Image 1 (cartoon, rainbow, N blue to C red):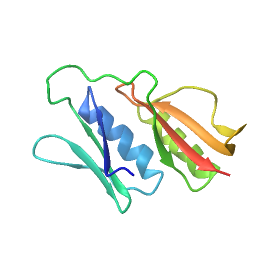
Image 2: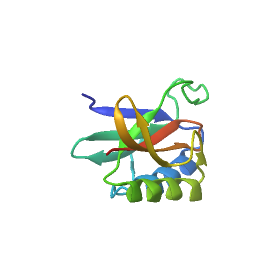
Image 3: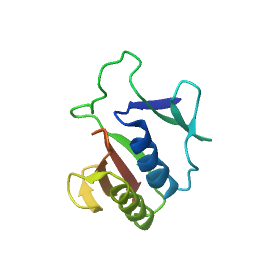
Length: 125
C-alpha cells in the first residue's frame, strides 16, 4: 500500500543515530543521507525516511499518528525497543508486550523518536 514514509526531524543527526540503532535491531542497514540532507532506509518492501521540514518550520510529531514497523518476534521487538531507548528515544504507551484485542493477540512496543514522532513495533501472534 505504501511506497515510502517520511518523518520530520528536529535534529537530523540525533534522529539518524536513533533510527540506525532501532531499525538496525530489525536487520535494516544504516540510513543513507542524500545531498539535500534527507536520510533514507531502503528495503525490498518500502522506504522509510527522515528529513528536516522543507518549509523551514519546526518538525513535530502527529498527535494521534503512529508509524508501525513489523517485527519477526517479541524478542526482536524487545531488541528494537531497547535500541531505541538507548539511542535517544523515549518509551510511551504501555510497556512492550503481548496484548489481546478484537483484532486478536499481538505484540506491541511503542517509542517516541528524538523529534517526538510516535513509532511502534508490531507482531501479530
